[in-house]
Length: 91
Image (cartoon, rainbow, N blue to C red; front, side, top):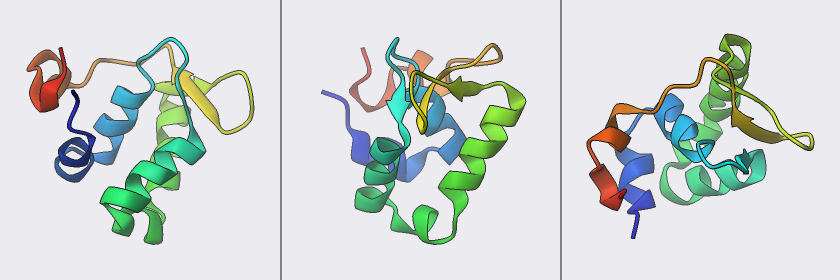
Protein backbone atom coordinates (compact mmCIF):
# COMPACT_ATOMS: atom_id res chain seq x y z
CA UNK A 1 0.00 0.00 0.00
CA UNK A 2 1.39 3.39 -0.99
CA UNK A 3 2.14 5.81 1.83
CA UNK A 4 0.65 8.95 0.25
CA UNK A 5 1.14 11.01 3.41
CA UNK A 6 4.93 10.53 3.38
CA UNK A 7 5.09 10.98 -0.39
CA UNK A 8 3.29 14.34 -0.26
CA UNK A 9 5.20 15.54 2.81
CA UNK A 10 8.71 14.54 1.68
CA UNK A 11 8.81 14.93 -2.10
CA UNK A 12 8.75 18.12 -4.15
CA UNK A 13 5.37 19.24 -5.45
CA UNK A 14 6.55 18.73 -9.03
CA UNK A 15 7.66 15.14 -8.38
CA UNK A 16 4.45 14.31 -6.52
CA UNK A 17 2.27 15.70 -9.32
CA UNK A 18 4.34 13.75 -11.88
CA UNK A 19 3.70 10.61 -9.84
CA UNK A 20 -0.05 11.22 -9.63
CA UNK A 21 -0.46 11.74 -13.40
CA UNK A 22 1.43 8.55 -14.30
CA UNK A 23 -1.65 6.34 -14.51
CA UNK A 24 -3.42 6.17 -17.89
CA UNK A 25 -6.38 8.10 -16.43
CA UNK A 26 -4.23 10.85 -14.89
CA UNK A 27 -5.65 12.88 -12.01
CA UNK A 28 -8.02 15.78 -11.54
CA UNK A 29 -6.88 19.00 -9.90
CA UNK A 30 -9.52 18.62 -7.13
CA UNK A 31 -7.91 15.30 -6.16
CA UNK A 32 -4.45 16.87 -6.06
CA UNK A 33 -5.88 19.67 -3.96
CA UNK A 34 -7.31 17.13 -1.49
CA UNK A 35 -3.96 15.39 -1.02
CA UNK A 36 -2.28 18.70 -0.22
CA UNK A 37 -5.13 19.98 1.93
CA UNK A 38 -4.88 16.84 4.03
CA UNK A 39 -1.11 16.38 4.27
CA UNK A 40 0.60 19.70 3.45
CA UNK A 41 -1.79 22.64 3.54
CA UNK A 42 0.97 25.26 3.19
CA UNK A 43 1.33 24.24 -0.48
CA UNK A 44 -2.31 25.22 -1.04
CA UNK A 45 -2.34 28.34 1.11
CA UNK A 46 0.75 29.78 -0.58
CA UNK A 47 -0.49 28.99 -4.11
CA UNK A 48 2.40 26.63 -4.80
CA UNK A 49 0.27 23.76 -6.12
CA UNK A 50 -1.48 25.88 -8.73
CA UNK A 51 1.72 27.62 -9.86
CA UNK A 52 3.53 24.26 -10.10
CA UNK A 53 0.75 22.72 -12.19
CA UNK A 54 0.83 25.73 -14.55
CA UNK A 55 4.63 25.55 -14.80
CA UNK A 56 4.53 21.80 -15.49
CA UNK A 57 1.89 22.33 -18.19
CA UNK A 58 4.02 25.02 -19.84
CA UNK A 59 7.04 22.66 -19.81
CA UNK A 60 5.01 19.82 -21.33
CA UNK A 61 5.50 17.57 -18.29
CA UNK A 62 1.73 17.33 -17.88
CA UNK A 63 -1.12 18.27 -20.18
CA UNK A 64 -4.86 18.70 -20.01
CA UNK A 65 -6.90 15.54 -20.09
CA UNK A 66 -10.49 14.77 -20.96
CA UNK A 67 -12.02 17.63 -19.01
CA UNK A 68 -10.95 20.96 -17.56
CA UNK A 69 -8.82 20.61 -14.44
CA UNK A 70 -7.84 17.05 -15.37
CA UNK A 71 -4.18 16.25 -16.12
CA UNK A 72 -2.31 13.40 -17.78
CA UNK A 73 1.32 12.77 -18.73
CA UNK A 74 2.70 15.23 -21.24
CA UNK A 75 5.31 14.62 -23.94
CA UNK A 76 8.15 15.67 -21.58
CA UNK A 77 7.00 13.58 -18.60
CA UNK A 78 9.65 11.56 -16.77
CA UNK A 79 9.15 9.14 -13.92
CA UNK A 80 10.23 10.66 -10.59
CA UNK A 81 13.35 9.13 -9.04
CA UNK A 82 11.48 7.95 -5.93
CA UNK A 83 9.33 5.70 -8.13
CA UNK A 84 12.33 3.83 -9.55
CA UNK A 85 13.69 3.56 -5.98
CA UNK A 86 10.33 2.04 -4.94
CA UNK A 87 9.91 4.37 -1.96
CA UNK A 88 6.63 4.73 -0.06
CA UNK A 89 5.43 1.21 -0.88
CA UNK A 90 5.42 1.72 -4.66
CA UNK A 91 5.72 -1.64 -6.39
